[in-house]
Image 1 (cartoon, rainbow, N blue to C red):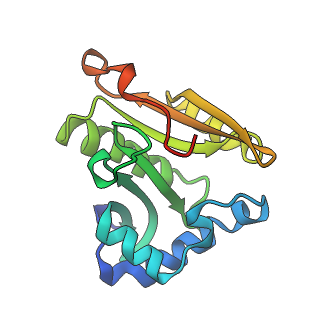
Image 2 (cartoon, rainbow, N blue to C red):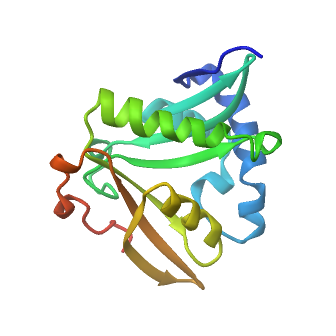
Length: 178
């Protein structure tokens, strides 16, 4: 097996990344969760790559996992004043093999904490329709800081502190959709 490569996605990756996202989010669509990633098309994937930091895990020349970092300065109404991660997906055939965990750890520790000195990061997920996902994040040290019941689901915003001495909870704020 060759070494895993972590890198930024490029627009040349859009087609392969779309296949990865569509296959990984198929079970989420079946839960009737309407996230942008569940209805991704080539234009959305290309825009995600161009406007945000889409990190991929590549193995043997194949994209196997991805996560995108959105930064507070990318929007007038960011979800938080800390980086926000979304579009976290791993090819189904790699489920349970640690590829997604490896990528998330890389983004949390190497990119956000060590390189960018981000005191924390945030994400949003479903706590009712997709409860195991929130539990997975809790096991990784994430905490809920906002929740809202809407359309038969409970949307939660979670954060993970990366640099405790620099973390300011007032910067979490409420998401613009609240």
